[in-house]
Length: 187
Image (cartoon, rainbow, N blue to C red; front, side):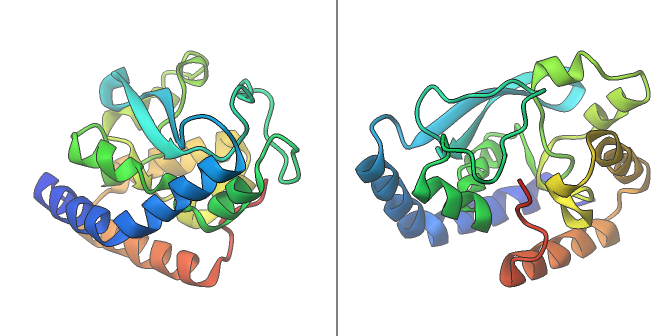
């Protein structure tokens, strides 16, 4: 498992390096649609603590869906810029601010919303034993293409088996997925 110092250094460097890209994306979002280019949503973090996650907005303002209503790839509420940001995972770049604030880690289960956590079994609540991450074991093993219960099981497996070696493997696989575009966006 990677430590806090690694998370701070990586998120700081990544924010500096990607700042021009994020600025360009925010301008593109605002040119296409009105509203803030940054999307904020309450998510559940380590030990069930709520926090506000930051993302680049990919949908028209007011188009939020409930947890039981997945967003299809061709949903008209997704903007053209948003479709590109989702496909390339660039919409997640502002998560680096959450890492700097200590609410997230670079590697860990993706944070989810309270209504989903409320449905967890006692076993599934184990995924809250670690900080949520920008990338994780479920993301590099199928991402959104996996059924929700399977993603949770992969997250629990990560909690039970986390190590520096596993985190490095996840990071390497994330880089490969980002470079090739394989398995990043299925819906």
